[in-house]
Length: 164
Length: 165
Image (cartoon, rainbow over all chains, first blue to last red; front, side):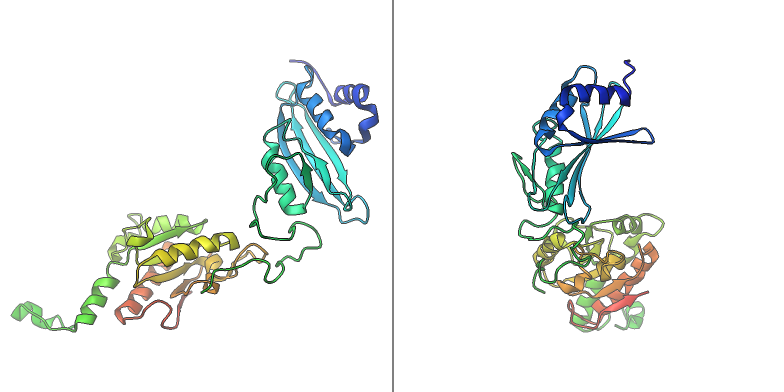
């Protein structure tokens, strides 16, 4: 077993993607790296296939609504390396005016449904996704219910019921 | 029906409709619409300790064509409501509906956008059983209340629904 640590992960990332990294944060041993939207697929592909890192497992992919005037949404990727037992969190910032993020379902196929969930709940559009349909809500639903400005009880009349 | 003459004279007289209702109420075959945790208590109701067979309802039919009472045991989302209604429509008359538990009766603790706030918004309900989930005893009490309605000849949604607290 190699003795890769968070510092080493950061070192490798810095040598290859210095310009793609917006910020780095480490809290209680958890490393978080904010990556530019344009390079997220390249970074992910590298992290998965690099011989030392091997982040083979995408544990989770989710959306976040910060409800701020700019850079409102985030997409968060949780990676795990079965080889070095390391975890890494990647983040991409998404502005409300441009909700497109490149898909990573080409890197980890499990991202397919995770991205559909993030699209369903937040309306983040994953470009290049093979089948970007809603996951939970009915296809004809027009809103994105996990956004902070969506009312808890929903919008009356937006979901149909069978006739009694 | 008077059963007094049956033992002494070997026959009895009754009204045909009363006889039919008596037969119906003692073999209410459930359609187990188990869609969340209430379904576990519904299963417990069929176990030897609670023994729903005492009331002639042990035959859980997974085909709506062969069932009499739909027991809606669980949280119904808007997406699932269409399925519940479809299965209800496929059941032959006469048919009845028990709303088992808080979710089916009123949406329960799910006061939120995807959950239907009570199945009576899209199917008629005969008996509401309270509880989260209701104990099997309470479901049996609800079943007995339904039997009472069936004996009186009530069709689905015809009489005021009964609430079992």
